[in-house]
Structures are given as C-alpha cells and as structure tokens.
Length: 218
Image (cartoon, rainbow, N blue to C red; front, side, top):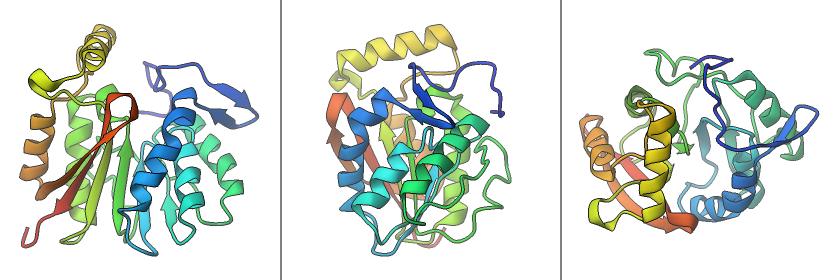
C-alpha cells in the first residue's frame, strides 16, 4: 500500500467536490454502520478507523454518537484529504487522518491509546497480509475486553450469498491476492492474534459486522 497504489482503492466512481469525495456505497451503508456501532462502542471511546476511505463513515458515526473521538486513517493521500474535509462538519470529534499502512510492522506507532478499532471494506481489496497486520496491530493497541469491529462481505461456506461468491470471483479476476474472505479464515486469524469473535451481525446487502474481543492474558 502506498499513496499512489498500482490498483485503485475504490471499486466505484466517486463524486468529487474540491478535496471531498462522496462514495455511493458509503451513502448506502453509513447509517446502518453508524447505528450498529453506536450500540457497541463504549461511552467516550477513542476509536481508530483503519482504511477510512472518503471519511463518510467516520462522520456518520460521530454524528450519531457525539461522545466519540474518532481517529481516521488511510494509506492513500487523496482519501485522507477527503476525510479531513468531511471532518469540518464533525465539531472537532474527528482527528486529522493518519497515514497508516497495516501491512507494515510498525504501523501502530503514531496512534496512541484507543478503546476500539473499526475497519470497513478493506480486507477483501487488499492482500491477506493486510488482514494479518490489522489483527496483529490491534492486538498491541487494545486491552483485554476491548474490541475490533470488522465490516464487509464474507464467505460462509454453503451459507454464502450468491452475490458474495460472484463478487469474490470478480475481485480475484482483478488481482489473485484479493477476494472475499472466508469467515472461518478470519476467525482463525483472530484466534491466533488473541481475539475471540463475540458477534456476527447481519447488515444490508449481504454484509456482516463481526466483533472480536481481545482475550485476557495474551
């Protein structure tokens, strides 16, 4: 991951107004995500978002929960500029977006203490080491009982939605290292990293919100 990746980060066309980007998919899912997270984030939580994209999810979350302090991040400079533009509407509850690349070993260094980590729609449009880096870094950031929340499409064997199977095939056609991830593989990665999955929440358009709690004593 770099500021100018070889392949586009977005799989959609986005509206542009100055630095501000508007994502059609974010427009469809941001309120559902904000509502779901609002029920699960601790009061006054300092939340790190990985791969914030346009910044619209962050704004929706702090608008619904004004007690939150949000730390957006993205490896892409254009996305960070968009997030910082949207942050002007957040009343100081969104920090300047950090340039974080979870595929690097030391990505957590600029972050500081956090109470939760959130990541939407990243691990299927990045190589698997990005998921590994996300969990290993979150394990170092979070204390026992704190949670990593992961949103997006997943494969669930025979239960997999046909649209997610088709999406997986499309992604792998773009890049063999991409793909909709099997939930069993994500659970196994979480367990190796010191997390237990505590929730599976069905979301619109065959997406899920998965919550992973940091295990004590690891």
